[in-house]
Length: 430
Ligand code: HEM
Image (cartoon, rainbow, N blue to C red):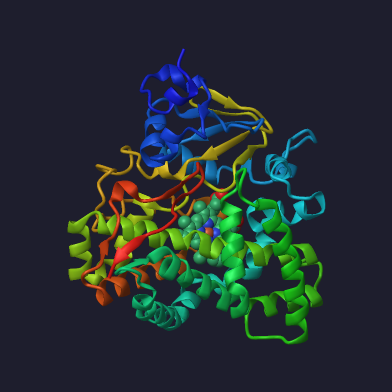
């Protein structure tokens, strides 16, 4: 019988029924390759995470991932499943990691955790701030922040080496999203810390402490902003809340701020980090982008596909009725998790998928990769993230023509987790 660890690297079909160990270091050290191998075993793979009393179903093929993400029989909120016996796995997970009961509602009611009319209502409140047009208006400011950060890089160098994650990849998106939402500059280091703790859950990370501190802090920030309104998204949301509480409850307001600030920087930082690492380890692609900076939008598309930060959709989907995919039936109330990274490497959709090619044409009728998801929860900040990526890569390569990795690529420190693909540090020589 195949062990769970072996199942991540095996190639036979028999492993499909044996739960894959999502904590397996072999899988996590190369989630793109590892989940790609699973994709070839079965349309639906069963998985488990050590210490969590839950079985997951994973879909890994491009067509199945898109189908699940856009199928109305799958929902994000267990309360949308008919009947009352559906377990809220996210709440159970948060409780397991020590989040106190009275703080739980803030973390299970975001725009990502709602369906139907509730989802539309929440998304509409902020979507206008993230349209392509509004994002284009922000471009000069994004360029200015980028130039300021790049100009300061030499002052952070020690022995000729700078950590690009610390001094560029993180500060750029966190500054942009905090300015947009209206988080004062003095609070930004604190958000950076919370973001890090929120995505680093595990025995040693103070995940629960971060959730409590964040909620208390935002209540305080709302009081402050109500007394001294600004010209930002938060002021607009407070106004909506105060004038029309039916459209946005107190708790939803706090949750919205958390979602925007965390989703707006923890992911984009790793698009910049992973993307820079990919370019520095593919000199031909790097040279091409340097020579033809107008390729930047396509390069960002390709980097999102090739090394986008989210290995899986951040929320599993609950089946509202029994749904059969291939030879597996997902029962009502069970979940299925779309594996974005595996779908983005599916040879049924992408020619020679493991090849990084910044000139790759979007494939025919498709909108290409699923790194920003698909369907009703398609990333609200995709246009902003793409723009930040374009500006970051273009300016970085222009300003530092001799940029090089200061570590052996094999020694790059990654945080190994089944959800995200992220570098801890990115030491470079300028
Ligand atoms: C949703 C990825 C940047 C805000 C999502 C989803 C993905 C994603 C995969 C959908 C999750 C699902 O279907 O379960 C990314 C990546 C980013 C990025 C890879 C950067 C490279 C941003 C930025 C913002 C943002 C800059 C700024 C506000 C959101 C929000 C949602 C979302 C609010 C929830 C949308 C909904 O539920 O309707 N993102 N995102 N994201 N993203 Fe992003």
